[in-house]
Amino acid sequence: MRNKRTILWTVILLIVLAALGWGWHLFDKRHQSAAGETADVTINADTLYHQYSTDEHAADQKYMGKVIAVTGRLTEVQHSGGSTSWLLSTQPGGGGINCQIFAGTKIDPEPHSGDLVTVKGRCTGFLMDVSLVDCVPEK
Image (cartoon, rainbow, N blue to C red; front, side):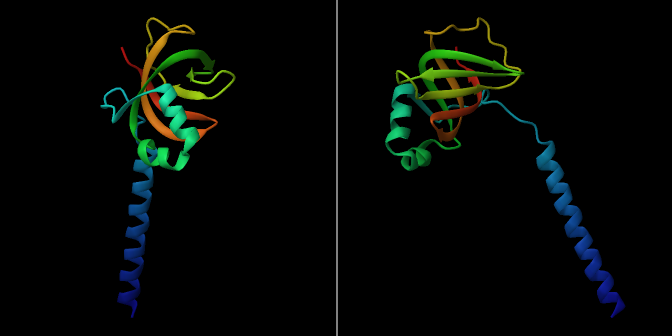
């Protein structure tokens, strides 16, 4: 009886240690930009925004979690703390593509409003704007 209890507690301890090890692995995992990845889709900012505003569910099926390259007019560059966001506007008065630039990305030269840019990043869905994260500008 005592031997079975010891085996049971040993197995439980091993499961807990394995779970803690996996959790630490996920916590310590390095965040990566989309720079080294090939774009799954290349699309115009107007087309991407129109697809999301027309049928969000269908657009999520096509683009969610994928690396996409989006080309459009840069409307605004926002610097907040250590992060930079680019807004590619498609609609007068609102609506566009919000591109969160990967931290530490060197952008030389910095584009200005009105410039035509191509940005590659991971699509995370639609919240008033289409959101892309881990973005890098394409040359």
